[in-house]
Structure formats: C-alpha cells, structure tokens
Length: 81
Image 1 (tube, one colour):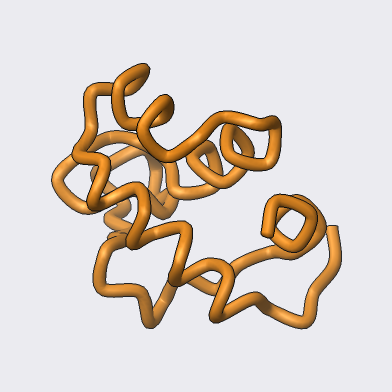
Image 2 (cartoon, rainbow, N blue to C red):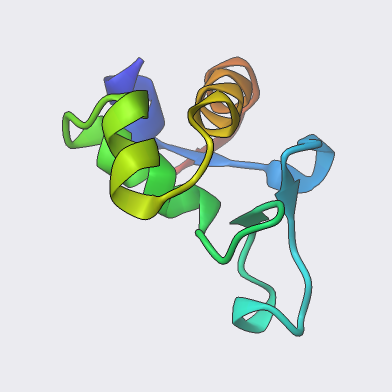
C-alpha cells in the first residue's frame, strides 16, 4: 500500500474524512477537525510510519488516520506525481 500511496495523487473530493476550506491552510485538503494535511499523512505512511505512530506523533485519532489511509488506497487518481 505504501508504494501505491507514494506514486499516486489522491482525489480527496469524495472523502468524508477530509475537508478543503480556503480559510484553513489555504484550502489544502486536511483531515477533518484538524490542521493536518491529508497528503502529509500519506507521506508519513509511505516513509514507513504506522497509523498508530502517525496518530501519536501528530496527536490525531488513530481511527481517523486508518480511515484516511483506507480511502486513499481505494480511491487513487490516475495522475502520477
């Protein structure tokens, strides 16, 4: 899964766990209820961090991290980085 997440750009528009608000981080897609960019979670995971490590390091719910990772694995865009 890490390789998939590392090489794909994710379309977050349909993800119920992510929001993009121009008043928060200039519209960067973030995990709802946080200021944590969704792509930063993917990058940390692709670099070898587990969901529980990401949750602990950034003080966000592990369940939310796992849900975001599952969504990303199931909904990659066709666009490559």
